[in-house]
Image 1 (spheres, rainbow, N blue to C red):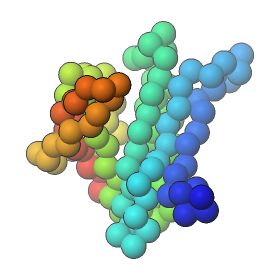
Image 2: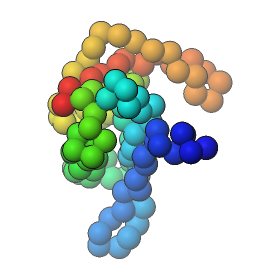
Image 3: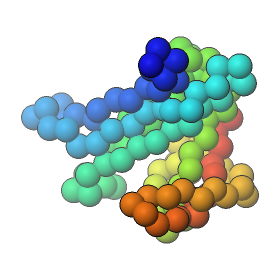
Length: 118
């Protein structure tokens, strides 16, 4: 349990004006030897395209660079999730050309791998 906790960081995104939880973002699969980490994020649909995730990702990417001393951050993104692809590119991720299959609710989905070098 101790090692798992060290390899994960997750934050809840809360609106300042009313303390409503609108999403989460964070890290998992932290490889401290390679200084690499993977990011994941989700946001309630009512709050898409309003800048909340850009703000949150910018903050946690700064944290990963300065506090976790990461040099590479990866994101696995379903290609049809245009909003997620856009937000990743907006904060500096680039598509690596590599792909990964992920099983979600019993179905297999192909994801593109994106990289941000810090």
